[in-house]
Image 1 (tube, rainbow, N blue to C red):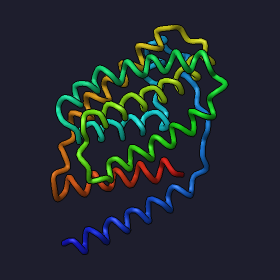
Image 2: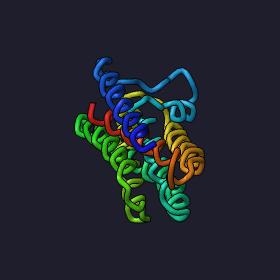
Image 3: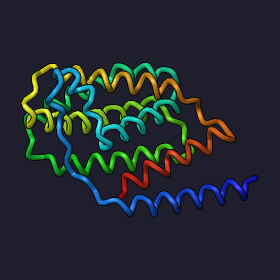
Length: 194
């Protein structure tokens, strides 16, 4: 069984690595302006925003209940703080693009690591991911011209993703759930490094 699992992990990692080399990167996306601003915020979910949110939710799901409850409040709040920072400093876009990629790789690494996801570790991941994603959204928001109701849309999306995914995944204690956590960690790490 262990040999089969090791072969499956190696094959999956190799296939994922090859597939990530095929597409060319896309460095820009826009805010949808054909809808009211709150919906523009809620729909602002390009892969560069959604994948780190999902990776963070999986990391949070491996922590204790206090980490999960804290993430529900802290993640939307840090998204909002980051939005205001990004809208004030759009010249730092390339720095935060790299931070976004690095953060995804680090979150993937946290999923791979067989360590206890303590409250301080989870809180740090939530704060940093929220600020980086918020900063990126703030840059996009500043350039789009949509109103301030974009901000609660982003915060609401962060809350919903945390509630659904952090609360919906079981702790990886053995067997299938452990293998699933490792595969997700590999996926997020490879995408973050690509």
